[in-house]
Length: 296
Image (tube, rainbow, N blue to C red):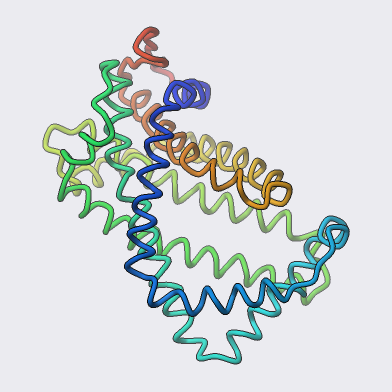
């Protein structure tokens, strides 16, 4: 039921998705302006590597894993070995952290807007929510950026380490799907544990982010299985959409879908939170009220 209501509420919030997309673009431009002097040389080098790749569509379709490894990953590794790889990796980590911070900044205001629409049917507006959260939002974004960046970088290192072992062992075609599923499962577990933090802040009278974290983690662990299954299902769906559309559209559709994915994740976290507290909520634009069943 939370997933059904998540899809319904997301479809009712298309204007919010557009507003979030515009906000992300603005924040991305700010981040790019701040980091341009650091990342432009690396981007230029990677662009040269990409431009030097000579791959036919048939090779990419018939042998995607081998082609990506030999034409892209191997060249990136050669580039890192030829340069000061510690400095390059340090810059990449710093850039990733900054991007993560700017992506996290809109998420508490977004959760607040969706929370109010679900609880009262009233849209307080993304900009108003952005202003009203103020310092609280910046502090939360900083903490979340640090925590999630550390976890995600660990997951990425583990993912590529396993992929490397599979390529060396000649079992890539058999093992890669299982590695991808394991990666999605680990990412979903992280989401399940942290998912109730923002909903608890929105529902709390004190609005203290640390009190919200305490309540959220306790709630997340006591109901981890349901949290995990919901987020795992959602992530599998989105990975499938991204994988099916990335190559045919040259990454255009995955980029366009990112704001929708963020809205859907926030909505899922809130539907789970309302259900855990057995609180009624609107499942559409202020018309239909749903009363969570106690057995959930």
